[in-house]
Image (cartoon, helix red, strand yellow):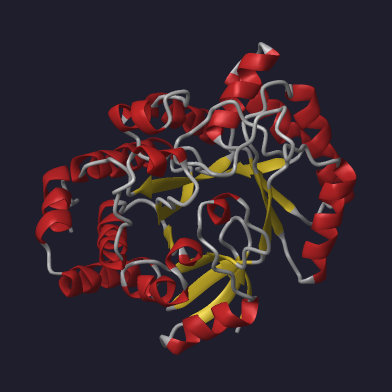
Amino acid sequence: MSRLTKEEALDLIKNADLKTLGKMASARKKELHPKGITTFVVDRNINYTNICWVDCKFCAFYRHEKDADAYVLTFEEIDAKIDELLEIGGTQILFQGGVHPKLQIEWYEDLVEHIHTKYPQITIHGFSSIEIDYIAKVSRISVEEVLGRLKAKGLASIPGAGAEILSDKVRDIIAPKKIDSDVWIDIHRKAHKLDIMSTATMMYGTIETDEDIVEHFDMVRKLQDETGGFRAFIMWSFQSDNTELLRQIPDMEKPSSNRYLRLLAVARLYLDNVPNIQSSWVTQGPYIGQMALKFGANDLGSTMMEENVVSSAGAAYSMAKEELIYLIQDLGETPAVRNTAYETLEIF
């Protein structure tokens, strides 16, 4: 099968019948995952700080250092959260925070080493590219050194957060202090070269065009061709409540469920070299999260024991392990718990 071109992907986004798109994406999913197994991970998001100097207009989570509700979690508070995760059989922490203006590499090394030593059974999937970039700057060392030192202490993989839309004309408006698209890509390239796997993400629904979305897909696919380091692609819609961007553009429309499924299907078709596509039930709700499995997704993400960032902006869905199992079985697929590396741990 010939590869989808950017022009073909754009045409599918703009013109394709939604049911036809679903069938095309499902066929591609079946080629990649012929056993009909749909996975999820039992994990917890731990936001170690909400202090951030980047001031993204789409974010309702961040605080400044002097704000009354600003925090940096103590190691004891983090331990308590991991203990709760272990009680429900969790295997991974998604570890990220605001971009703290003062914390340097030694603080992060101590943190990762503490968790890895005390909880060797827990995989640390942490620190977005913008956090890594800023740790390098404030510590006056290279990105490669940050990655290498954190890997040596126990960092296993990095999340794709901070990608938003990989178009600088969009980023310059919604997150002008954030790293450029090429820098985001290059940090993941550097991680992959150190055998640190990662995920790729996309947040759509602000001011981007269809062309920007296809360009984003293409940047991910090109790096994956080069390194093979992305385990999964995760896409979600902008959650606007309590954000500066909504205050600036009050008539901004929330993206529809149709739009989510359409983009997800095209992502599955275009990203032919990324093995896993994750459904974002956290932002879309259980029903559309389940429908996503008919539009190319083969993974339901996480039980999401704790989530603070998108919930600050109005997404308030949560599900227990049993609910995820039910949603998967209800579609006639086989549920399985996986680990961070997408290895199956238990089939139901």
